[in-house]
Image (cartoon, rainbow, N blue to C red; front, side, top):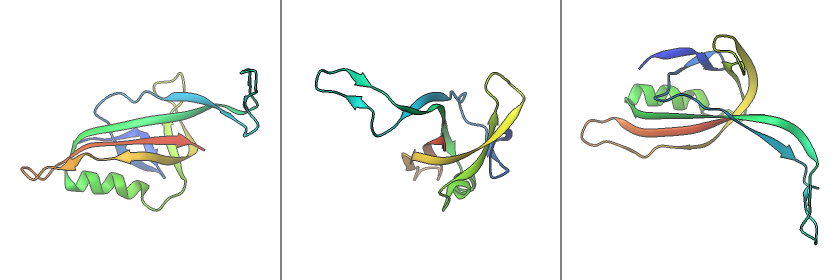
Length: 123
């Protein structure tokens, strides 16, 4: 597996994921947002376009799995370097956290880890 400088956690490169990383963007509403009794939505947006980057790896060795999980372990937040929106080569670094990571299982046949997935979310 190849390390890539397009994506880094605290300056350490991530392995290139199996498929393209497709970031999504969402607005964050305040706790005062919501629907009234008439069903009308009232929004108080506190921040726009907060990014989420999903990563997926189909097969990993013990060393690759340990490396990736080690980059995330024990960190409430970290510096995440990623391509700048609209650019294929320029990168930026933002403060992020990891959410919802999962791994399906470790193969008893060949010892590989299967289907590691995690989201990196902008703080």
